[in-house]
Image (tube, rainbow, N blue to C red; front, side):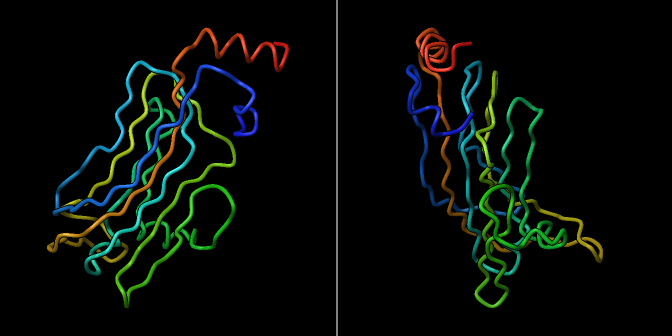
Length: 167
């Protein structure tokens, strides 16, 4: 589903937020936990700072346990996903001087979920790196923004969908 299509439909609403969170090694915080509801994941971005260990923090998007997308700045850099593209998974910033690491997931189309949407940030105590194992010691700060669509009236949504698209 495209955002442009939603503007013609009824029975849905936006949900999103911008948050600043402190994370200690081994800590995971849930930002969104939607259960037994339908909707669409629109996008999320997270900036991690507070030391060079911040590159090992992560943003995780989980839609119905089938679309499971963990975004680690360190891992995205290893994969070469550090060039900006207008959609998809990307490492926006990997600055080892200022210790700022930014990851984003902005799909080219909204990802549907039927039963579950979870968005979490975490900071593992230990991580496996290219050269061995690393132990995180300092606390980091995460700045996170996310947006998703909730279907609040499934009957109105279906009816308006059929009117617009004739299906």
